[in-house]
Length: 90
Image 1: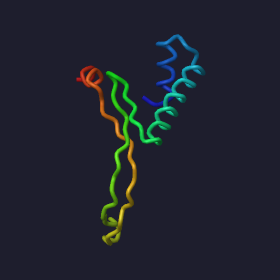
Image 2: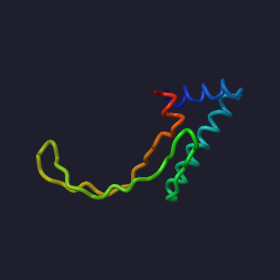
Image 3: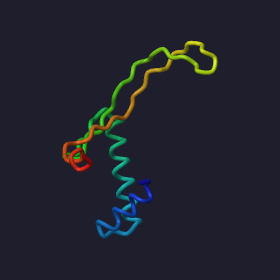
């Protein structure tokens, strides 16, 4: 499912117009992004938790030349499914 299909599904299930559903999806994604940028966790009970994982710098290898290189440290978004979501798909 892509974003357009998600917006259509939300619009149909919530009785909203597609424009309103798109605004809601965009606002949700923006709010989660801002919270993660600020170092917070976002917990949606039953659905899951979004958090930030810090990945340290590490040594890698250029696959083309075989020469070693340093991969920079970075923050990565992480999602852990909640028990209701996990139970619904299993």
